[in-house]
Image (cartoon, rainbow, N blue to C red; front, side):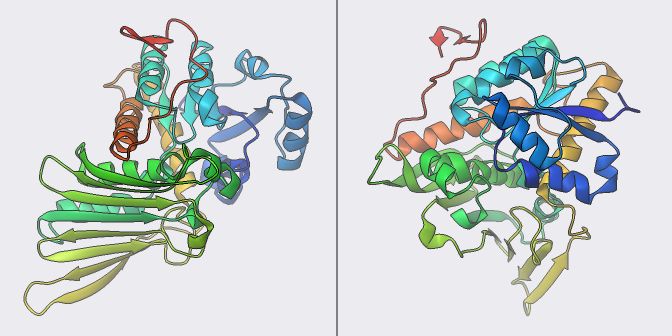
Length: 368
C-alpha cells in the first residue's frame, strides 16, 4: 500500500463533496499523487450519475452495495445522513473497506462504540472527520499551551456560528447546532486540553417549528486538571456574518485565533499571542501553510497516512495501531460528551433509527 494510491469511493452525494474531497485533491499535487476518487454511490442511480458527471468522478454505482462489493475500492468516505451513517460505516467495514466518516460519525455514543468494535474485529482503519483538529494551527496552539506560552492553561472559549457550517443552512437547521457544529467544538477543546471533561451545565434554544432541534447550544465544561471551557454554536441565520473564534486563556497570557475553521481564509494561519508578564507583549505568529492546504487537505492526508502506515506495519484497526490520528475511540468520547451536553440542556440524546447490522446492533445488553 505504501507505493499505491488509496482508492476511495464516495458513499453519498452530499453537497460538501466538492470542497471537502475534490477541491483539495485538485489544488494539491502531493495529495493527488496519493489519492484516487474512483466512484460515487447514492440512493438513486440517476443521482449518482448526475453528480459523478458534474464532479468529474469516473464511476457512478447502481447502489451502495455495488460500491462495497467492488474490489477496486480500498476505502470509503461516508457522507450519508447522520441517521444512517453508522449503519453504512459498519457495512463498509464488514465489506473490507477502511472508512473516513463525516462528522458526527453517528447518532450517539453507543453507535460509535459499535462502529469502533466493527473496525477492530475486521482490522480496518476508521476515522471521524473532525477536520479542524488536523490543521497545523490547531496543532500549533496545542504546542504553545504545552510550552507554557500563556502560563497555566485556565479556560478555552470557542464560538461556532452557522457562517462556518459545511453542511448548509437547511441541513444544519434539521440536525441542530450541537450535531452540525458543536461536534467540532467538542473535538477541538478535547484536542487542545488533552483530557476528557465533565459537563457543568448546558442550555439550548429550541426551534419553534421543532422543539427537538436546538437552534443554539451553549455549554460549560470542566476538565480534570481544572481547566474550564465554554462552547457556543448556532444555526441561526442571524449569525451568518460572524467569524469562527476561539480564545485560550492562561495565568500569564491569551491566545486568540479566528477564521481557521476550514483553514482557507486570509487570517486562517494567524495565531495572536498576548503575554501579561512584565510590561506585556503582543505577538502574531503565522503558521507556514499554503492557502490551498485547508483542513480537508490535512484530514485526507492524515487518513491516507494512517491507512498506509498501519498496513505497512501489518497491525490494522486495533486501538494501539493508530499513530497519525486518534482513531475511533476518540469519536466514542466525542459522542459521549455530545450525549451528556444534550442531557444537561434537558434534551434527549439522538436515538438510533437505523441500527448497524448484526452483531453490531447490540452493545452489551443494550440494543441499538
